[in-house]
Image (cartoon, helix red, strand yellow):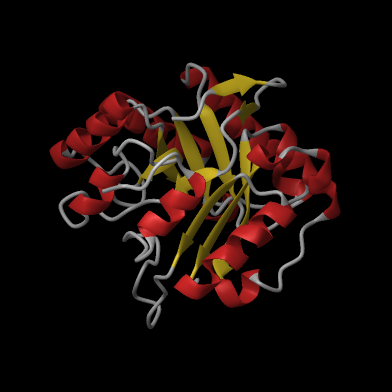
Length: 249
C-alpha cells in the first residue's frame, strides 16, 4: 500500500505517484484470481473496495474475510462499499453498514458510491463523513461521484471519483478548472471499455487531467447486466508494468 500522509485536516496524499483503485471485484468465490492478483509484489494498488452484496451483506462471509485478510497481510488498504443512492439513504442505515464493514472485515475506510454532487446536499454528506471518521483510525474516505462535484466536496474527503464511465466518453472529457488547486492524488478515474491499443492514451488523459488513482479495464457493460468492474482487465500485466515496480507473474 502507498504511504499515506496527512496534508490537511481530513485529507491524505500518497507519495508513490499514480496507482490503482479497485472499484469492487466480484465475490472471491467467483473471482479468486482477481483477489489474489492484488496481493502480488509490485502491484501498485492504492486500495480495493469490498462489496459483498451492495455493502457488507447481512452476515459475515468467511470467503470475504479470508480474501480481505490476505490483503491486510499484503499491506493493501481495503475500503468498505457504502451505496448512498444519490443521498437518499438514511444516515443511520449507512452507519449501521459501516459498523458491519469494520467489525467483520476491518476495513480501512470507505467508498461512498453514487455520492451526490450538488452543493445543497453537501452538509448531509459532510455529516456522514464526520461520523465515519469518528469510527475510523486514520481511515480513507473516497467519494464516488463519477463526475465533477461542487468543489466543496474536496474539502471533506481524501479522494473524489471525478470520472466513472465509458472510454468513448472519457477520451473527450474535460476536467473542471477548480481541480487544478489540488494534487493528482486527490482524484480517481474509473473507465471501462478501454481497448488495449488505447491504454497509453488513457493513461495520458489521466495524467493531463490530474488523476492519481485510476482503474482502466477493457471489460464492458453488456445489455445492462454486466458489471465491468467485477473482473480483471485483460491487460492487467500491462497496467502493472506501466504503474508499478514490476510485472505480476
